[in-house]
Amino acid sequence: MRIIEHNTTRLQLQHRQSGLAIGAALFVVLSSLMTLNLVIQGAQRIDGLNRFQALSWVLWIGLGAVFVVMGTVAWARLGRGTTCTFDKASESVVIRRSGFVRMNETSHSIYGVSGLEIVPYENDKSAGLMLVLRSGQRLPLAALNRFEQDDGQALVVTVRRFLHDRTTPAAV
Image (cartoon, rainbow, N blue to C red):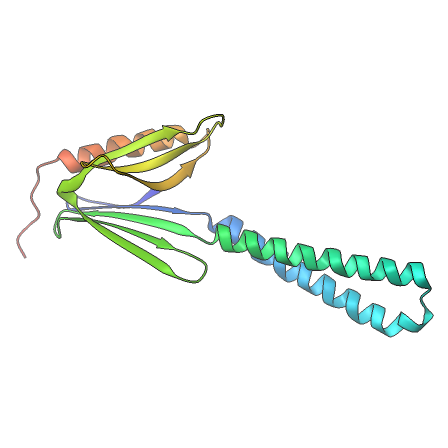
């Protein structure tokens, strides 16, 4: 998760794995082209194939189809993103989660937010970055691997400072 906007009245955090999503999309395109090429080349030579060659051809087409499906699933999962906006002017915290097909948005009062917290996952070297509400509810924002946890801790401090800074927004 990274800061994309930070001033006295607004702090915006974003988590997105765009590079991996683009890589997965390219994998899907290349796998589709490979499978299509196998179908076209094999269909032209189907009469000259013996039983084992035909079986091999079908298996390669099946493997190509599996690659297309796996790549599509990876693309759908990696294409998701989360944006969390702390806005003192509107006195709200808005969490937007974009998916492969749809977008989900939830809003909370900025006064109902305690801050961010890093929660380590059991039996794993990763952790979750959570938005903590005063009610005790924890809303997941991002998963952090062990290399991102120091940056996550810096985000926790930045959000704490932003929430506790009593600078009032300028009158409009």
